[in-house]
Image: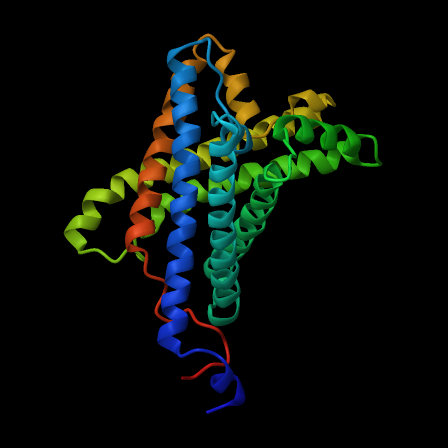
Length: 279
């Protein structure tokens, strides 16, 4: 037994901890997308309402105390999800082989970075900071465009975001999305269509954001760059936009329900563990 083995908890304890961290994270993500989906559905069915992105949805919760409790819970949950994706991404990098597996690892590490950034913004609410994701997106886009090759950089960023969305859709349609769900196969067949539709819808939303960023670069107009909430608000302004908005809302709700299933039954890859430990 190595010195590291003597210091760290047993493999069983590490796996239980990792499973708990993952499930807390998926539960938090489910709550976020359920809230975003509810606001999007309300906006699609009532033109007087507005859809919200993640940050705006958290801040739209009524009641200061409730908002702070919700922000603290979601922030903690997303911290857990970011940690889990970071561990899983690193593991796939070192233990996996082949281009597809490396892309999967890169996607998980990218998710870890995104959820960590969102977590920091949400935790900021607890200290009185009220971030506006749409405004910050456009301010940073405008600043970038003032730099040499700024429009090119914004366009590349938009292309990458668009590609990530398409990648999510491709992964959802070609992979076993419930591989890590600890349920019998007949029950997996029931939840799989819901998960595919929900996750594909999230991919469509990401692609939509990427398209707006590319449009901002082409037209040299920072106001055309949007985060999720701004993208959906722009869609809402189209006479037929409510159809896409309602479709996205249903997809967000479906993805939230799938996240809740993951929160209850997620089981990490049996080989996923802290490297260098043999106990």
